[in-house]
Image (cartoon, rainbow over all chains, first blue to last red; front, side, top):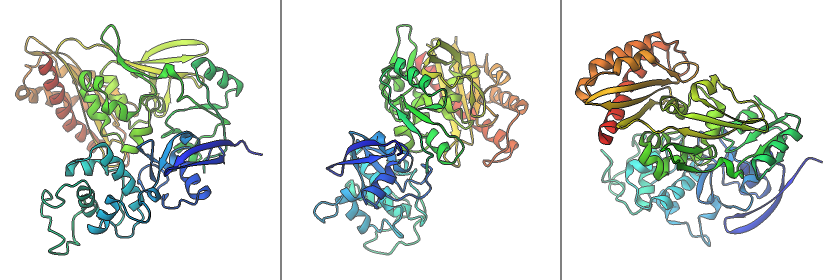
Length: 178
Length: 291
């Protein structure tokens, strides 16, 4: 038998207990043990942000965070954002502002932006860009993602972006990467 | 996947050293894990036991000491440094540096002790601490010792720390009056391509003491004494800095710059020249504000 450790933690508001090996990452446990596959693993090196989850309100890379380090803590994943099938404000803003294309980076973007808005409820565009610079979007839809986060923060989404067009008036599919 | 290991979770320094001893040396200290878990995952290192040091109270804390030094506990995260009121007041250049380290997830988990102990040649804080004359404090079952950053960092990914030793804290000594400590970097990937840290003290309207350190250029963060000397004696106004900066940049020609993914040696030297100007200007602005 390999050494295992009892891990008890709060996942999206529910207490869970899992026997894990010390070497298992939080991403492993969320995806393989708890079937919470919303959290994606892409670079597996803390660079891309696809695996971003919140541990005690702080964004971390679940791919390189030991599951045992979450013992006794509160973990939030993308599955915890919606309530009773209703999308939260940020998720709805991503839809309204076309904040995703293929969608692979989206769970990480949503969790990174959730932490960002909880920390700074009224960020400017620069603060959003800085806060999300560790989350990579291979489809390069950055401008729309930033617009979505600003909209969720109740900031005018398009007024301070140079050259931005109002999406309600005109499609803006050639938006530059932020 | 990370290779299998056993986990020890000591609650004090004494327990930590006992845990290390019990492994016969096949162990590594685990803090934020941003470097260690990565190299283990890549198969570059393997340990029978990881000793989790996050619960050691001796490695915590971030405060001013009685003599005006700033003591940074090894477990302090990059994010805590970025947000600390003490750092904002005493070392604003460090707060700015920390806000730009890697990404917010790494800053939330990665610790300053781990960063220094890993000795990645492309590290921001080591270069800054080198220019600040900071002291690294180490502890093991055999006792304590202290050394400067230049003595601590001995090569790429190689430090003076013995395997059973822990970084306890980093002490930044109190600066002379009217001192500023500036830093700037450029990064194309997660880590800096080139960086420069400058410490300046203004005396009687001129730059008195000056220290220039470069990072990511050479194999380890390096002091550049001739660049430091070129800045000394200059009239302490941003407009008069440029001549002194030109001769300071010349001193970078002597450095054994390593070409890497970020660019050729000449290109990195060129970047460092520009960063020196920006770091010096920040240091001078801070020094004049404290005069």
